[in-house]
Image (cartoon, rainbow, N blue to C red; front, side, top):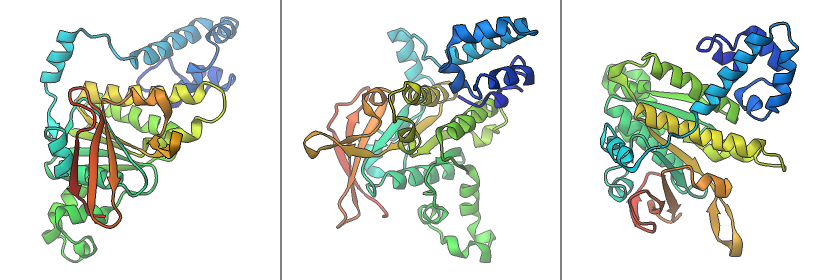
Length: 321
């Protein structure tokens, strides 16, 4: 979801008058609207000089929220969708590709779970480099300043530090980096804004067909959501579920593979578990657990959740840490 101001171009009813009305009730984004008492808001709108248009604007926002709900599909529709234009994309990590039958599937949300230094960001960077090398675009939402052009260069097989000395010899690296569109995102509202603008671009075909966006990465989703889950109110939970639905909606509608990372927290009996709680675990299609032995470069990967594979299946892969 997004700030109301960013909706004005696509939704004319969400104009400056409507935004000012909402602002007077401390509503500045779709999330604020979602958490506001609708009956009270309509009552205030009824007493406004432009009540009819304000009510139309409220209906417009309700339709935007409704569009985020996952569609109800029959089993045959789900099977047909799985067979149609849902390619498998190599991550460049042999262990993960072997475990998942080729890699990340377009239209699905894959979640990497693991403690710090377990290889989550490494897999994200390797996946981005692999997809970009095949002349497709990658949207990379970096929430912790972890995006590294140097590591991308390593995956491409070139020296990042020497690129400026001989541009022609390092054109492959420049082309790969040019296809990875990186955004620094430090709160969930920024993420909603970036994803909403991406949806507009994809819908209007601003992204050229020869540079089709095939991978969307959020590293890490938990660092954006964890800060809003405190307290007893429902706001944090509502935003978390909205974030998950929006990522899945983008993946499904535009045949994009979505990849997010999630840290672990301490559970009962000292056993670590994925962060973000019970509600979030049902959001992703695929969940992988990563671990890394600090004495080697081996990353261990196991399936926590998969729509067509048994949990517990495992593999290992040599990674560049």
